[in-house]
Length: 334
Ligand SMILES: Nc1ncnc2c1ncn2[C@@H]1O[C@H](COP(=O)(O)OP(=O)(O)O)[C@@H](O)[C@H]1O
Ligand SMILES: [Mg+2]
Image (cartoon, rainbow, N blue to C red; front, side):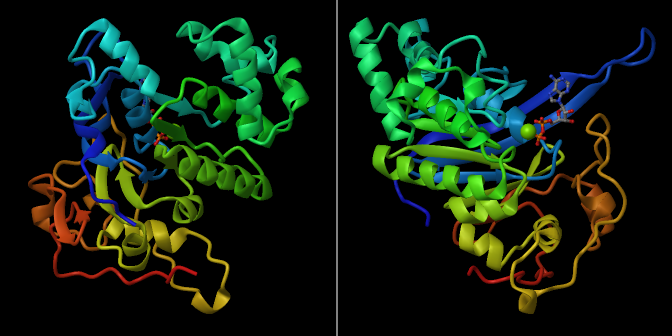
């Protein structure tokens, strides 16, 4: 469901080019990790960002977190440019956006007790006395479904799912408005994935969180997101309300991506669309539409210009000039 209202977070023309490793001679080359990506999140909305590995999802998340400086483009929070104000304002905006990582173990210092790990943000922001911080840690542990004695233990004593709960408690400690969750359940077993997704869903409702949910896994996104944005080779291909994207994809890349996703009901089995060739190098992406070298609908015109992300229906955007094709509906939502 798409919610009306002004955007809480907006990415405008976000672009990131990294210097590619190169020799002493010859031109310096760049990795086109993210090119001109724009989207917005309304308060309380969950936007899924999907695409194969290497499509630029993490780089988008890291730019929003301020962990990576955009080469071009801006990020607006509450209609103000992040970094446009004073240092104090920047710190306060940074507090309001927190990240949940794919591998909670890698992001947690193994030698610190869980309680201290969760309280880290409170310490850094100097929020509350020691006693208040201890009380807050127990409240957070309860919120994410862990016992309060977890505070005294170390991360390695917990299972993957529990460690992800610790990671979520840590992100929530400073009371953010926005979570950037980068493949938060991708490292977990399927049964545990559902538990952590349910927890995120509950927390979203309870705390009115706005979430950018990054995942290569369409099944996870279908379960969780209000709208979905699809990336390929650094660019946005399609963006639509969840039901629309899954039932009526309009972009050839989304069609292929959906056709490759496993579906539980064999009665709905469909033709798998295999794209030709490999993903081109982001150091030398194709001109015009980056998908054209692999797209079965490509025309000579597709090489000429980058297709704009144009409205194809209510709230439905696609970056494809072929308005005459209608990729087949893939499956109805169960
Ligand atoms: N620090 C970096 N230096 C050079 N290239 C990078 C760096 N970080 C990411 N990339 C490249 O940018 C592209 C997008 O990566 P990433 O955002 O991690 O994609 P995803 O999260 O969708 O898998 C990839 O080609 C990746 O190799
Ligand atoms: Mg990634």
